[in-house]
Image 1 (cartoon, rainbow, N blue to C red):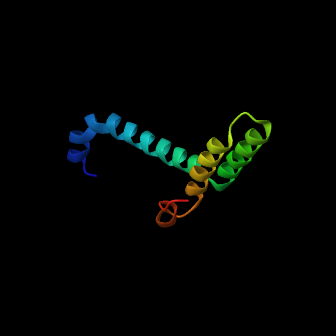
Image 2: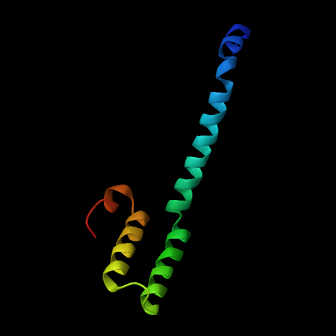
Image 3: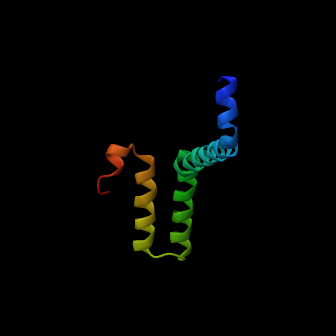
Length: 81
């Protein structure tokens, strides 16, 4: 980056910083949402809630289908489970 370009784009530095932080937050959120270990833990939580009777069978099946969909590749996960 040249001196002139740097001077003209200096006012945009805070915007670039905010965009960078937003991209990092998005990456982290996506990783946490789609991490197989996290999804497996959530599946175990659904099973425990089902066994404890805190959710009914229909709700458990709905949650399990959504969690399994997150584990599958996008082209397979979009199909009806």
